[in-house]
Image (cartoon, rainbow, N blue to C red; front, side, top):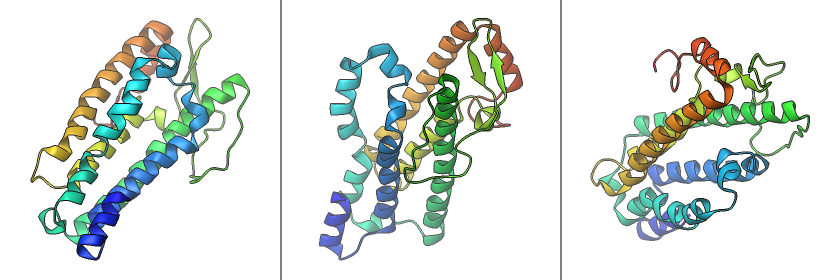
Length: 229
């Protein structure tokens, strides 16, 4: 909002690139509120509770790294990073499409967990999107009795939600252009972080689920992008 206000003050309008980041940041922040009850079931909370990693990252990492792209747009004239209207429109449309995948993927995962626990409560938070719940999902059961979701988006790729996260980060950088490395710090950092997290998750899941996870990897061989990788 600050970037948009500054741009309007200086130039009398808000560029499509700033509007794009406004949309992107709204969707990201809104998702945190929309699914706030799911945060307590994440591995970070289970592992560290409210420890140094989460405190430091949320108080320092998020505000001082997520803002690089908007700071860059607010500090430079729009003509230095302006995309043509067709490319910009493609960015908007593709971002919203990938957001739908990301939102429904996380919803499917968390509602599956809630169904397993028998405590699923549907919240009518914005936006309500199609395919948020997989009815009677296909699963794989481990020897310990744990179940793995092998349906919905997770029937196409095992970490498809990470692919969406990385796409968001790359688009934040792409909309700023290539005149400076400054707005690309966050996408590069995020790519390294999400790759490490994916490898960590694989190790944990193999240890937890054993042969059931091996079977899942055989049934769903793609990690990030269906039929590609």
